[in-house]
Image (cartoon, rainbow, N blue to C red; front, side, top):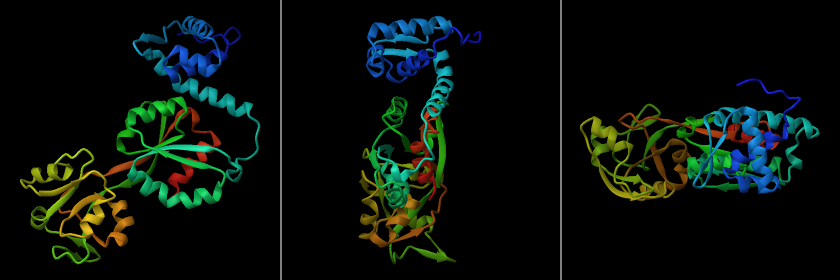
Length: 307
C-alpha cells in the first residue's frame, strides 16, 4: 500500500473509520457521528479508494472488517487519541476535580481482590467520580471497550490472548489454596504453613465452585493424573458462599488464595498448601490501546494496580 498523500486526504475520514469499526454498522456509525447514512456511506467509499481495500464487508448483522482494517485500527486509534490530546487544552490531571462515571467490567473475584482493597483510596482521591461495576464475558467486554461503553476490564489469564488493539497490564498473580475449618483434624503444621496429606485430601468431602453445576473441576483433572479421585459432596455457583460452607462443616474446598485470605477471619477458616500441583493465573487490566493515555483511564488503571 502506497503512503497516503496527506495534502489530498481528509483526516476526518479516520473518525468515520473509527466509528465504523466500533459500531460494525453503517447506520449506527452515522448516528454516532451525527451524519446522514448516505454521507457515511460516501465517506466509506472515499476510505476504500484511499486505502485500495474494501475495509468493511457486508454481513447479515452489519459489516465486518477486512484484514487490512484490523491491521490499521490500532494505529488509527492511537493517532486519533494523540490528536484529541493535543486539541484538548488542560492542566495537570486532578482526580479531585473529576466528575465522571468510570465503567469497569469485572468478575466477582476481581471485585473482591482488586477493587475492594483500593475503593477507599479511589473515593478519597476522586469524590466526584462514580465507579460503575458490571459483568462481562471476554467477547462482550472487548466489544464494549471498542465502543467506549467500558473504560477498563479486569480480566483473568484468557484476556492475555487478545488483539493488539487492546493494552494489558498485570495487576497480580493468583494461585489456588485449600481451605478447611479452624482446627480441622486433617490439617498438619510444618513450619509456619498448614498442609494436608493427599490421602486425607482425596478422602474428605469437597465443596466445588461450579457456576454451571459441573461436577468436575481442575482439581479432579490433577487427581486423575495421580490415579486418584475425590468426593464432591456439594457444588456451589458462587465462590463467595463456599468459605462459609467450609467453615461450618468438615468439608474442604480449593479456592483462589486472595479470596481465602480476605474471608479467612470472617468464615473462621484455615488455609493449607495443596498436596498436588495446580496452575496459577494472572489478573489483568485491559484497555483499548487508543484510550490508554486518557487521563481518567490512566488514573483508574494506576489505582487498580497500585495495591
